[in-house]
View 1 (cartoon, rainbow, N blue to C red):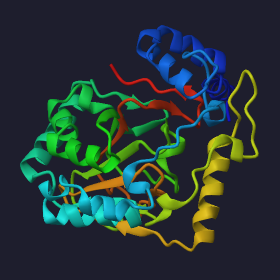
View 2: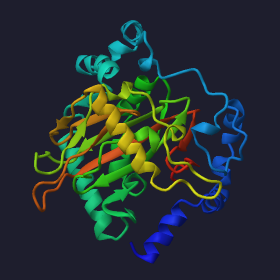
View 3: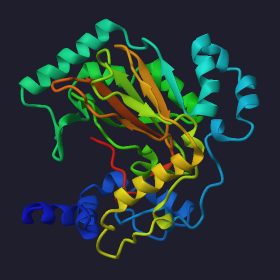
View 4: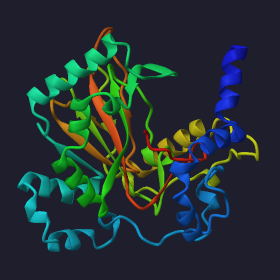
Amino acid sequence: MTLASSVKGLARRSKPAWMARNLLHYPALRGNAQLHRRYGIRRPVIGPISHRHIKQPAEEVPWLDRPDAKPALSADPDLSSFPESTQKSLFGWIDDGYMILPKFVDHAAIDAINSSLDDLIDRGEASTNPRDRSRIMNPFLRSNEVSEALTNPELLRLLSFTLGKEVRLFQGMHFFVGSQQGAHSDFFHMSTEPIGYLIAIWVALEDVLPESGPVFYYPGSHKLPYLMSEGLEVRSGPLFVAKGKDEEYSRRLFAAVKEAGIEPVEFLAKKGDVLVWHANLVHGGNSIERNGATRRSLVAHYFARDVLCYHEVTERPALFPA
């Protein structure tokens, strides 16, 4: 590791540095003050935050996570407004923590999305993750085609129905190739109070082949206990977030999945298919087995409205992109 990378790593873990950045975004964070009071958080809205700071946690959970979820879903009058296949997927969500929506986005729309993303790259307007050049961050801010796909009214209606609260698009990414990301759940990275009010989608922008590093997931893993910072051995100090926090979390999570005896399932998606997953569903990306293999896709994360949104891993409040 070079000196420069060590300094950058330290800066990313610096709580004062994040507080300075948050101060610049105070108008966007000001509304969290009411939520801080509601949940007994005695910290400024620009300050570090993690689950251990929540002294008066909410008792509610998303309605499809409750013990009576299946009878409640059966009795809901809005259920019949969805196609029969989606109704079946909603019942599957309760047990498995994911839904597959085949051909949800038509091929013409997918082609327009791919063309728009290519144009962004050609014009030098694609915002890439500085630590991972294989993805474009928040392309919906610059591409009408991507924005329309990720804010499709029927999609938002389904996601809102699933959580029992209206959702809001928080983050989007375009992957050129498979992420090859290890098993993880999104909640540790994008957290809420009340717990569980995050939902995510993955959209196939081309057919996925076995050698291209398909997405995998562990059905039913969303029912495992949520892992929080206070349950890890690493401890953050007053000035820096603990080093290796994410790595320990991943090890603990994988051990829990293994102990539960849950086996992974590979998703060999077709162009236009959409995978929807629970905030706590364990998932990742398999290894790319062929040089040059692409796996173009869109990923998006949605927070429910009127909940506290933060990042447990970095201990900072969530900022919605402008």
